Length: 255
Image 1 (cartoon, rainbow, N blue to C red):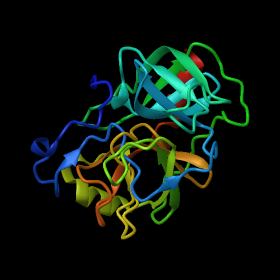
Image 2: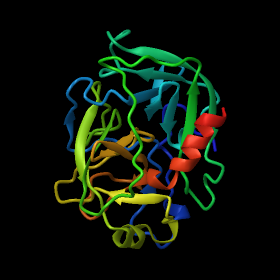
Image 3: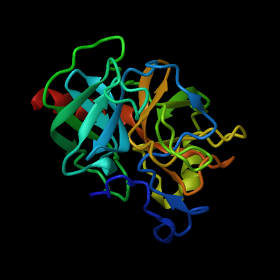
Image 4: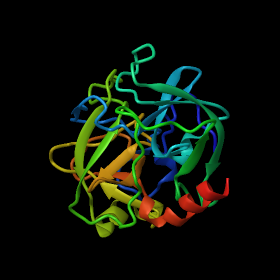
């Protein structure tokens, strides 16, 4: 499924999700709500996806030549920025802009609706690790309710504006029972929920494909959420990466 460059989170899905509490929007990157500027380069695995120099999604460096992102972020062509803190800095020191060789969506993406939302992006060359660019390992453990995790991205802020600097916030994992009750017929075992606390911390539009890091490992990718981000009792949905470790490893080894 292709998305419109620059606004992959602009699809309003309420009409598709009868029976789901509230209206949902596909978060072509949810925005970080009630977060703060990340400590510069504290998330050195964070990637930024650009279409004709316009930021539209995030990703995560999981191998010297591979970036993981949400499948709904797929484009015909794009550039991957690594080592970035500011999106406005012209060739920020320690950053690299990488050309893409190919993108591979999970074969079961969108089957059922919006499930299995991940893809692998192979860069044209390997990236040496540095102070500003580093890969992160993917967890083999599935999320535990109550775990505190960090989500980061350049998506929308609470004031509706896009930030210049990478934003970070902590959210807690929600139980499968609560997640499935909120997202009803949309819920799939390839998903899990986090956020929805009274502190209103959340990911939001523009954060799609970005990392959710729990216990120093990559636990999830920003996938989708409510049309209005940061609502108490309304967590956002993340791709449940513990279900995909075999596919990720085999794809990287085979190509």
